[in-house]
Length: 298
Image (cartoon, rainbow, N blue to C red):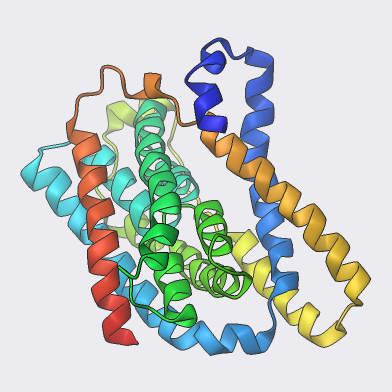
């Protein structure tokens, strides 16, 4: 509904609304994911932790490497656009793009382009995966389909929504795996900070960036684990859990609507098709390559 609004009535979206939309897609989303941990126990985490972690490592590494190779060698894309798009597809969508942007000092319009591609294809996958599962195209059990969704969909909200469309249990497993994948953002940022080509002196002068890049830690993923631990130790009452889950579901709905409102066709005008082709190829790899990896690990 958010995407439909953004491309119809939302063409004239008041500027005063934009900070609110951004607040939902960033702050509200992260808070909702942190408190999603109330639905998960330590036993749930351990149940999918090892296989989910192995799947996540393989998928993140292969997707990022494939994105860089195809983006730069095949399509001759700008280095920063290739890195941003590959990071968004490999790890956690817009959050990864914005974190990497800060490290490699990319221009903001390049980040907007990368965010648009990962949100677009992540949203498509959010609707596609439950259909493929229910029609038997994805022959996974509830545990494996959760790992598959968590390790291959782009945004955290996409993962939660796609899992919920199948079952509560699948959604829990998917979010757990996604958080493992999100935490891989830290080693990626460290690697980029150490090995990525540094901006030229002219770029530094223009941007006023003469200091070292900060490594942004995805604290919301760590706090998600803390909430899981507290939930298992404190065992809150059913009434408290129900209230938190109701508020949390509303927060996730706000975040999904905000992401939809950011999926605007105008963002793709004048950028050419190559970045979109790269996003499509990485999306197809996540679907088929992710299937092979999760099946192999399973």
